[in-house]
Length: 81
Image (spheres, rainbow, N blue to C red):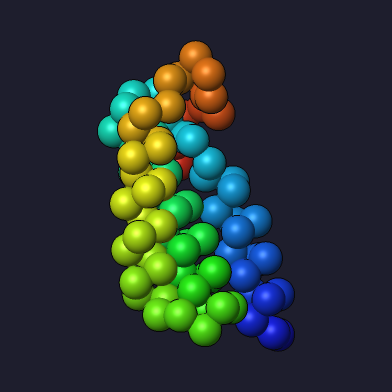
């Protein structure tokens, strides 16, 4: 399995959690997970540091998730609840 195939699989898996949650904290948590996966994947493919990519992506994803309104994006109850 190539790096690109792994990246596509990780993004598809993370997409299943996209913007989950009723409240701001749930959306921030799921956004952080998706951002961390995406950031690490992009960094790994482009030759950067996956840890730095995960940190930057996680922070960005958490911010976007926290700023998302539940009436704009609501995919139901999160898996952890």
